[in-house]
Image 1 (tube, protein in one colour):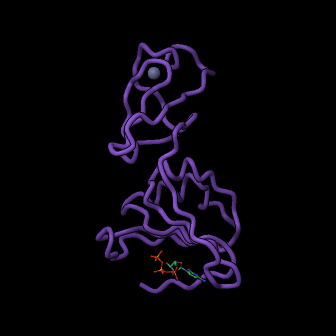
Image 2: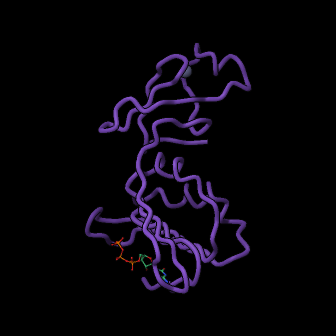
Length: 145
Ligand code: CTP
Ligand code: ZN
């Protein structure tokens, strides 16, 4: 499938197939006044299939949250139609208000307004634990806020 090159902006590449729409919504690109493209199930040597998001505008992205969603993503910064920088991501040590603790006995379930903080405990297994009750959460699957 052919999608035009962008002029100035970001190409979010190597997204795990199927995750593109969630990132698209998280970045609120459905309301963008500039050109955006969500391309799904593109054949890729590395992953078999991947999703790509092209954004013809320079926008702010929280790279630690994006790395939590999918650490294998590459963000290409495009300036004057050329890739000027490739940003690689990784799993952040800590995420706040990105996922919710599912333990009904956790203080974050009982009291609203307490930030949901998770810390990386096993990078290989992409495992995070709740700061308050140690409930485990695997990154890359399931929902985020
Ligand atoms: N791209 C784009 N518009 C541009 C330049 C690049 O949409 N003006 C897109 C390309 O289509 C590609 C991505 O940005 O999807 C990365 O471009 P490039 O670095 O040229 O491709 P690769 O070398 O294949 O990237 P990688 O090695 O990271 O897979
Ligand atoms: Zn908890």
